[in-house]
Length: 257
Image (cartoon, rainbow, N blue to C red):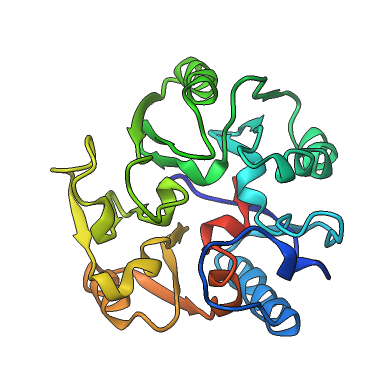
């Protein structure tokens, strides 16, 4: 994986509990969510990352999930067009920061939709989930940009997998291999790739993040942590209970570049 030196984050705002979710785990506790987000931000810094923290948004309950509104690959940024209509205007909240950090950026145009949570970079390839949030037109627009960067896009249709919001809800690319939840095991073209396969009761932990030789993992999933440590990786476990209630994972909370 490339070295990450910077990240963009946004703490959850006062309306966080009004965000989109299908988790069925109850309403999040905002004060606890803020403490968990602080720990996440501090972990990024421990991994050697300079963190840009944007102000919380009350107008957009899901705005803390900044990964969905932009894709950054090899120092090139593309603003997305989120698949959920209620999240479309979140892109405007981050545009100025992207413009300040990048000399040039692209943007997904209608009728394309793309959520960053559906984009899994894996070496010279990028797997893009075709989901309820990301459509073919959006994936194709990203694919053309990736091709110009020497990357190859491979689409992965996840629409038939019940309960899978984004591709990266079920897979991560860590240390040259995939971490794969049970619901994603049969997905072509992922089947046959080097992988750590995790159990049904630890599906949430599939959304882990490798940063400069360390791996951020949701706390409470000891077998996933042990498997990663067994590959010689340093694991940082983070409490994520309040973000899990809102269908969010570790990767969702930052844009890393």
